[in-house]
Image 1 (tube, rainbow, N blue to C red):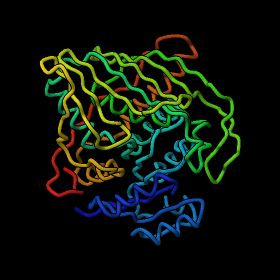
Image 2 (cartoon, helix red, strand yellow):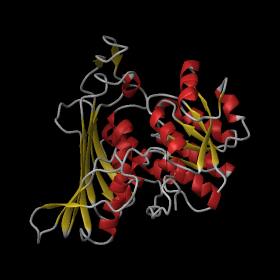
Image 3 (cartoon, rainbow, N blue to C red):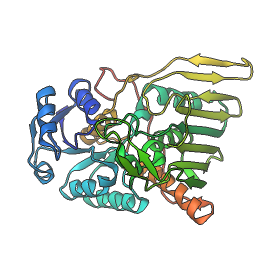
Image 4 (cartoon, rainbow, N blue to C red):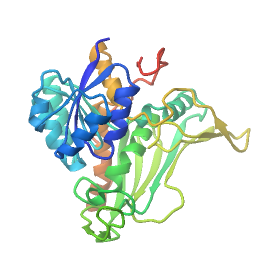
Length: 368
């Protein structure tokens, strides 16, 4: 298969693992060029990784005829404008999460991609890793019986104590639900199917956050978004899930995701990771048992979704991390705040069907 040429837009903290995997692990893609507002970042990337070239502007990247897929790694509140520009330039787009800062913006991007006959997809792609895919196989094979419920919790006290640039986590497009919610909700819809509706309660516990990480130690950040989000989701299958994401709570563990069924309970790995431990409790055993991982991509394999899009582009098959999924997850996330603001149960409108599960790769880094 002829390699699909990728242009990377934005070289923030997450770009390093994408660059490593797209240049070393996944064999059917090529990083043809990169662009960032900071020239020094581009020069550092070009010196470290096998990338084709750097650009003088975003528009120069978008107008490069060799670029087929734009990997959008800009800040969350910039996703709408940058993805829209790439689609208007005729490029397929894979975006970091979230798809956009609002559901309306997300719908507009999906409409535009369909109008242009372009592929649009995005993160997270952790659900394609060995952990979530093994859980899906166990659930689909009936090890839990009929799924009846789930519990998802992401608990931490924010990013200002360790992240080098934590401001955007508290600005428009940020917050614990928009930042970490995509991992948990993408896992849930892949395991349980389409969400029918939800109710939510949100709050903002601190009006300001003080950065204690370098290089912005001591600076104050105005909090613009909810930082504590609680919700209950009803799925079309009848299953009901409780979801909590917070940047306001001190706790000893961050990730918790469990699926409850009529015949057992499944402890799912951290959905922000590709692998991780899986535990299954069945009544005949009376205790949780470790389950082996049944798929590849157990380590940090960010870029897996881009590689899957590239394969779909060349073969014509569907892509697994497509915009139907990212839009459905975006509607869920934004509906929690809408429900809290309006004091009512919100019925969801976005369509969603689970895409095909991962297969077995005959050669690592070349997808099925």
